[in-house]
Amino acid sequence: MYTCRPAQTADFPVISQFPQTEEEAYFMFPSGTYPLSASQLEERARERLHPTVVVDGDEVAGYANIYDYVEGKHCYLGNVIIAPAHRGRGAARFLLESMIGNARDELRVPRLLLLCHHTNPRAMLFYRKLGFKPFDLERKTNRRDEVIVGIRMELSL
Image (cartoon, rainbow, N blue to C red; front, side, top):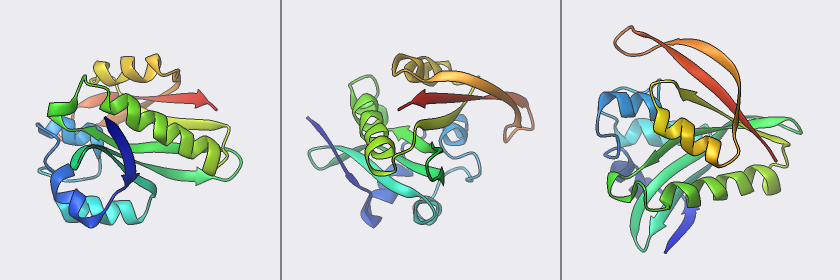
């Protein structure tokens, strides 16, 4: 049974191990370095709102936060990652529903936004299943200097 709680310092070493490849780390934290370190994740969390973990008992199963909050307008969902052992088991849905609730009920914004890379189709399809719709494209360059497309998606709350 999954639950959500605020992220704690002890969670970041665990979360830093979730990305299994450099590409996964880029999807989660484009400005971070790979391999991710607990300190860079914790530092970023201090700049963000609602750094949240989804847990299964005492085991951290995923992480997300909110950034670029504009009162009465929107905020962005960021740094989303699920532990490999919990992928496809409901942890992502539980975490995202909690983050959607934070944006709607606590921050009271009408739109929750996110950026998903075209090279991450599993995430794009998952976000679409939750009701997110694409609304803009952005040229990005990954860590290997390859051009990729960032797809901005939105959910009306």
